[in-house]
Structure formats: structure tokens, C-alpha cells
Image 1: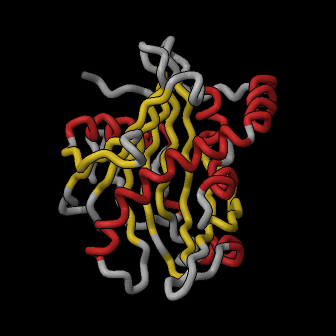
Image 2: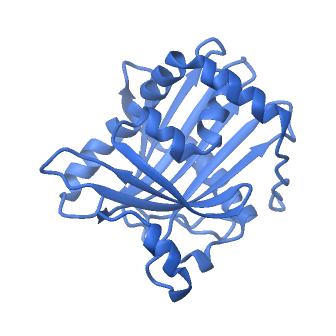
Image 3: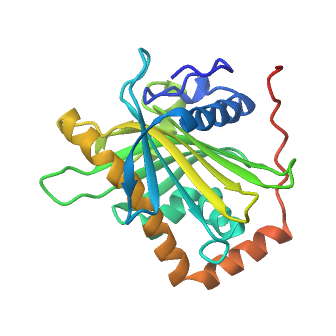
Length: 260
């Protein structure tokens, strides 16, 4: 999908040397999430906690887009808890609540807010294991009284450049899947926190597209109750992590807004 800022977000991988500038990626993520407000709803999931949305693929997309949105009271999960769990070493944390994620490795740290990760998914036979490699961009916007955090993941191919030979050695083996995703965690005026995510993906291999498209909405929705279950079972871990992050705050550079 080509966004107004000129950045294209889809499941086609890019070389590490061709990653867009960080500010452009975050702006593209912002624009994509705003666009989801006009997408068609495809129902509710996770016992009504999650609302799903769908957008057909554009000419430059590999697959359709799916979105989920959920709102949470501060007692259920605070902004700090969401941001610590999703905005700090997110792939490492996914191992704790996405049960099919069994191994992750950071291939390259580009900056304090950008890193390339390899994520390994273990499935029971006859489904083969999958490996996803993404560049993850993290941005926390503190310019408003209501905080907003973004996590943008772009698929990366580390097996094409000779200069990335070391990255390729570290990359997990398995059927090569691809996904692009944008997650926004936002404080609301009513004191709640909204977690909104949009993604387009392909698992690779021989799984028929119609099965992928039918199962994806429920799968992405299930991340919400799984995250909350992990949070509620280990709140002390979150408390300690939040306290540590506040001791050494990372100030994110402001992202330029396009001229209106």
C-alpha cells in the first residue's frame, strides 16, 4: 500500500540497505493506522473484546490487509504496561505470549529505536516451521498530553547482499514467511488505552491463500487476550521493567508532520 508520505508498506521484503528513513516509516505507520478508521468491519472476536476490519489488497499489495482494535481500562492494562510489553524488545516478549514463537534473535541493531530481528515460529506437523525477518521501528510520541506509541515492522531479506552475509548466517532456517504490520498504542480522553494493529502477510510454503485469509482475522485477534493473560500473570515483571525504563528514558526524536 502506497501511503501519502511516499512510503510503500506491503509484504514484499526489502534489503537492509534499502530501508526507508525512520521518520518516513513512522509517518507511513501513522497514516496507515488512520486509514483503518475507514475500513470495513468484519465482526468481533475474542468474546467481543476485539473488533476486526479488512481492506482488499491494492495493486501493489501481496495480500489483503487485516486490522484489529481493542480498548482497555487502566485497571485491565495501563499505557505503561502496554508500551513496556510491546515497545520494548517486542520479539523477545512475543515468546512469552505468542505460543508458536519459540526463538528470536536480533540480527542487527541499527539505532536505539530500529533493529532487524529474526523470529522463528514452531508449528505442529503437518505445518512446517516458519521464519520471519523484519526491521522493527519503535516510536513513542510525547508531544501531546495523551501518549501514543508506534511499532512498525517491515519484512527484510538478508540473503541477497554479500554485505549481509553475517546476518544471513544468524537468520533462522525454515519456510520463509513475510509480514508487514503497524501497531499503535494510544491513550484516550476517557482514560482507556486503545491497541490497534494492521497487518498484511503471507506464510510462505503451500498453504492455500483462502485458508490464510480465513484464519488471519481470528489469529491476530487472539494476540489481545494472550497478551493480557501474560500481563496479569506476571505483573511484577512489568512493574520492574517499567521502573527500569523510567530510570533511563529514551527520548524519541519528533516525527515531522506533512504540510497540510
